[in-house]
Image (cartoon, rainbow, N blue to C red):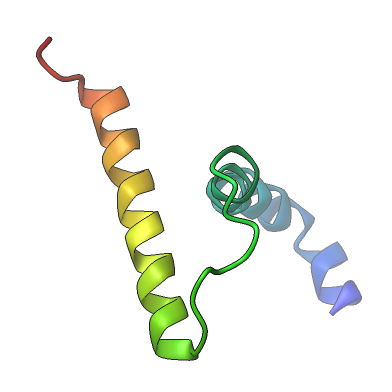
Length: 67
């Protein structure tokens, strides 16, 4: 894995910038470092709702909303 990462270092840097940022924002700024529910179904639902809220917030920031 380390060899593949070194070979594709530009793609790895791009992924870190695009993919890891939303998870870091959700985890640190929204205090979602752990799940409040237990079980894969419930935790998956919780994550889906959190990501949906993040996406809506980003869309409002990009597109804007009437005051």
